[in-house]
Image 1 (spheres, rainbow, N blue to C red):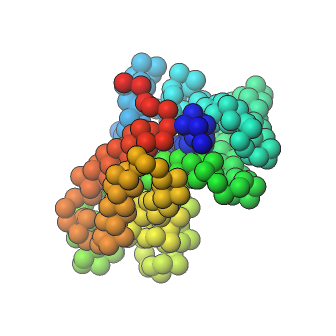
Image 2 (image 1 turned 90 degrees about the vertical axis):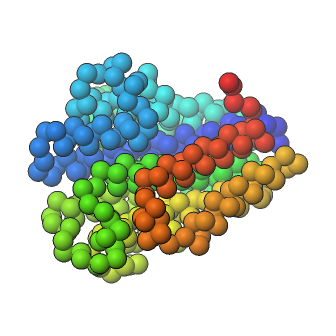
Length: 324
């Protein structure tokens, strides 16, 4: 496969996944904002959304204060923000258009219709007048894209590069969501995990906070099936990091990344596959109390660095080289 074709397919998938993950993260904060909280805590929550995507500096060029309205507009519809949902859906569609002949008609029409529907929605009014409905639409269009890809495309290199982009992006976003949420905890989740003193930290606000986090990754029902117990931060971390059967966990994402790297392996990619395999093995055989003992923030920061390194190596091995 031509590297430019692989590049378009890979980034098409990353952008549609990024749009979905941004919608999921913003919807968490919309739901949390409904809980009683002081204004400083509310602003801190919205600033955390910017921190997840490393958008603080860009945001300050457009807005003075991190209000709900400003952050929602900036991360959802602002065309000057390269990571906004608007720009991600635009980029996904443009990458799909560039390789239209490689995609099935159904995959191309899904991406094109998503972009056209967004334009219509904006023309007819502000989609953020009902943010949760808008975010559900974004998630639905991303689900539709993955389903149509799975159901209509030949399982060849084109399919593998789409899956590779999807799951590398998913690993990055899940780690960012976890890092920001756990970094702000006023207590040590390791102590809670070991002592099983669930009642100490499960007031109503805490319960709804973690429920919203789980719902943001479609994990609430899964958590109940796996643990059948009260929701605790340490178990949320365990579910989203180490559970291979949790679709949006770090381990599940790395399992897919490694499988796709094996499927598209070439003469240059042996070291990239080795690094991805090492990261997967650490997740596969890791234990949550060891991770919490060393510190979740440094663990996730290091994980994100390694995922970024994998992305750079994938670009070097298979795709159009990144510009310096």
